[in-house]
Image (cartoon, rainbow, N blue to C red):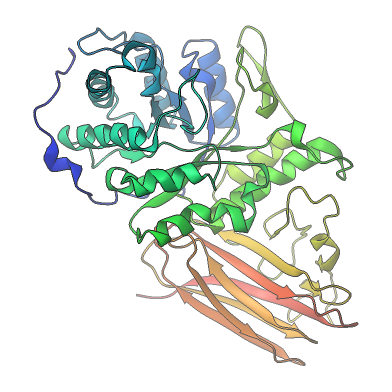
Amino acid sequence: MGTLALAGSLSAWSRPGRAGPTNAGSAMYWGGINNGTGFFPDDPYLSTCIRATQTLGLKLVRQGMNAVGGFTEGAPFNWARRDNALNRYRAAGIAVCGVLSFREMVKQERQRPTQWQRNFRYFVRNVMWRYRDHVRVWIIDNEPDVPFGDYYPTPAECVAFTRIAWEELHDLGIDDRCQIESPPPASVDAGYMTAMLEAGLAECCHIVGVHCYGAQIIDSRIRKPWERLEALGIRNRAVSTSECGISPNWCPANFPGGVGVWRANFHRQLRVQAKAHGYDYAIMFDLDRWRQREEEFRIATFDSAGTSYAPVQPVWEAVRQSWGTAGKFTNGGFEGAENGLGAWFIRHDPDDVTLREFRYISFPRDAAKARSGSGYCRMSLAGHTNTLVLRQVADQLRPGTTYRVTAHAYLTGGAATLRARGYNRFNGTATMVTSTSTAGSWRTLSLQVVPTNPWIVVELASRGTGRAGQEIRWDDVSVTALAA
């Protein structure tokens, strides 16, 4: 295939379009990991990346479109290496999020903005068409709030280049198979995102992208992109994170179990938090940078030749177990073993070395106190006033189907709250809630939810009363599809 010339006027596509062909973060493709094959697309490194990604059970990777040429209008492309890499990923059943960087062209045309945009349009048009059947999401550039040499793009420039990608996607007629993620800033609560949205960003993307690192996964921060969309009256765009992870260098001193346990716990909670806040997909950073910077984020160590890898434990196993398979709701009766880091996850600040919530949430066995069987969840309300939250992702659901979420609670004080979260693709703050403060008998709490995501996050919650002897017992939690 030869190169594609620029199309004529595309002004008709500058208006907002439909929200996208499907949920980019379906159950199969929701969780992914950054591969270094954007920089090194060749074997043996390519094959090793594919093998490691498959071993983790992941089916989504992010990589740049480096090394294909075409950076100036009319320039030739060098497709062979990238063709091979994307064909190999496709054959392996791994979807790709591809990065289209307008800042790669800064040195050539920064002082000539019109030609800069023409160059990018030419590049985008050809790359999009070439890989229309390989790339699931096109991500426009990367962390625009971080300098590229001595250059910072303005929010308006980010929107202009995102609009070019949007126009080309529609003009090529491939908007039924690919989506656009907006330029993702370096954090979930970056003010830069607000500036881009105010400049019209949501009019030319399907997904609002952010990066999410470290303690940004706590509720009050990870929900920020949704709050900014709501404040601007935008309710038809999804949110995703195409980079998320944690560096060993950030580990708090004296964390119980050390840096390895801290990283493993973080990655387990990252999945729960992103789903609880309705993120369309989440792509971890990263597998291994190999000959690149930022090696501290990796969860595997590749040898110098790129022919083999060694998992970094225990974070590797934590990712494989919690991210690799989209699991159905399980252990609602607490008869299986739980420690607050498994199917049921205790929400906590990853940087809190005291792990205080774990002191108040436990999973005893006592048939005399359980509603059925012998297992139950106990939330102690005595001696503190902390908010206690236990979550589980109920995955592999059918969007549009009505589900009943039910839990049973026995109170000796305080209040028991059941919530459903994460189910709304275009509103990650949407929550359904019911509660009871009736003590002395088992009470049934129930919600009916129609998800537009293929999951619901079930939340059991209470708040300490500081009073001796007061507790909540939870048992027989279920998620059930109702007949149409």
